[in-house]
Length: 169
Image 1 (cartoon, rainbow, N blue to C red):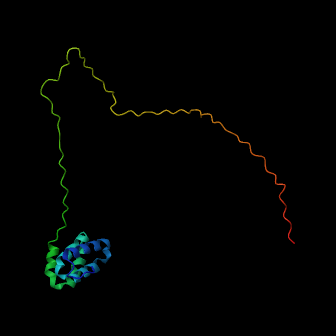
Image 2 (cartoon, helix red, strand yellow):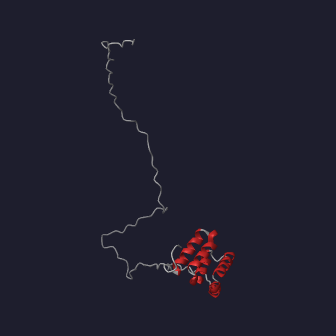
Image 3 (cartoon, rainbow, N blue to C red):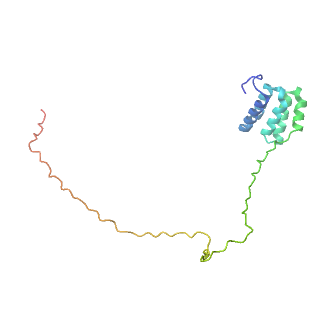
């Protein structure tokens, strides 16, 4: 709400007011005063937006009307008309999706008859129509033989020709 009245429209101001009241309901009066000072000419829209933001709660509506009347007494008739004609925004339900119904076309003629030498066999369905879970059986199998290659360690080196350190004097 840092714009000048020439740059900001009524709709933008009302949108910002609605959002700020929803975010910080305890600062409603301060935000309403700011909006009315910025754009007094659209007092009716500002009051309507504030009422929308508080979900038309009677106690809050009374505060909104008192604040608006104090700050814009010249617009009292507009404010009163806005409160009297206030209707909660109507939520339009999304149009229901049209469901397409398809029906199988059944031929009117008799079903085909088997030709000479053909035999018609029918399968029988199991009594249960749901799938039967498959039980998995696992058996322990012996581990494959592993061969170990042992390596003989080299004999330890004997360092006999290394001179010993002499004590310091």
